[in-house]
Each structure stands twice: as structure tokens, then as C-alpha cells.
Image 1 (cartoon, rainbow, N blue to C red):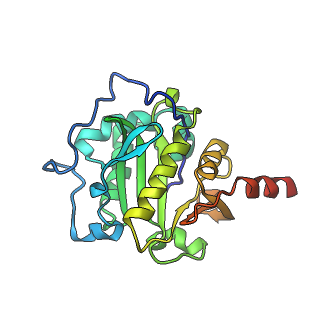
Image 2: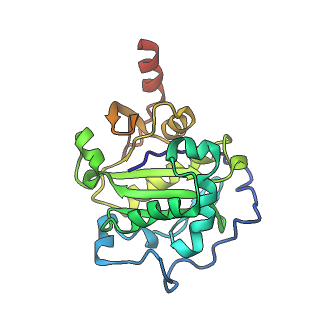
Length: 242
């Protein structure tokens, strides 16, 4: 799986309008079209992410909306071609590069659900909610049953650097723990070089558990327990000891 590659952002007046970023209208419950993320018997591996519904955050009303390839590919591909995103997601290029990646998530037997993050009706970023305990990541740390992982990016440069990533990460981690009673913790594994991402996760209540060597990066293994303890001071202590 790719890392979080989050390019964090702000709680302020909401997402920055963009002409190509249309509001998502009644995505939940609508009949899926070709390429839709459909609900299947395997969807209960993540307790029906598409049915979690909206949640209030300091930045506005936020919802995870499962991706539909034909509806969402142009927007997601444009985000993937942003230099700050491409540095960690490695999906820059024509739309078929992003399409292959998204379709692989959709074909993963329900172990990963790719979503648009929608804030006040407007797509703000791309998220993947996945079963970390069923992912290759589980070979690199002591996984627990139902560990749930998060990957994300904030799409527009103007929406980054003001705390939105932290706000939405906290909201999504809360959603995971609320909607998935069997899950006791939320997992993330950003590239250690991605300082903005690390800061966003830590300020959202995750703590640094370990540094792990993954096939494509050296990652920070970050954990959000149900207690929500923060790990910002732990990371600072670790860096000072190096």
C-alpha cells in the first residue's frame, strides 16, 4: 500500500473553490454507475465505510464518499500530478496511472476502500481506509485483529498548511473507532521525510510507535489508540536522541 503521503492543511473557512472540483451531490445511496465502488459481502471487512455518514468538524461537515472511477478519476488524477502529492504517492502522469491504482484498491476484496473526502459538499482530498492487519504492512509490525489504516492527501495547495489535515485526521480516526467497534486502534505509516504529514498525524492524536523499513520507504509507524494519546513529544525526544 502507498503511504499516507498526506500534505496537511487547514481548519479555516473551508476548502478553496476550484473550477474542476464540483460539489458531490447525494453520493450515498445513489445507484452506482460503471466503475462504481459497490457494496459487496466483503464490504463488512471495514464495516461499510460508505454508510458512515457525515460528521461535524471545526472546519465544516465532513464525509467519506467511496470513489466512483468514472465520476472521480479526472479530479483525483489532477491531484496526483501536484508536485507535493507526487513526491510521496508516485502516481503522476496520465489519468490511466491513477486509474490503475484506484481500481486495484476497488478489486482488493474489501480490504481497502478508496474515498473522496468531502467537506461541506465539496471534494477536499483522496483517502484510503484499509485493513492494516490484512495488508503487507502487517509483516512489519505486531498487528492486532481489525487494525485499520489511513492514507490521505489534501488535493489543493491552497488548502494545505493551515491545519485542515490535522482536523480531518482526528475526525476520521474518531469515525473509524466509532463505526468499527472491533477496531482498537488506527494505523498510519507515512514516509519519515514527510514532516508535514508526521506533524498532522501527531497533532491529531496519533503517537509514534516505531520506525519501520518498508519496500519503498523508511516509515514512521503511527498509532491512534482509543485513548487518543498524542505522540508529538515522543517524536521530538526521538529526534533529539539521534
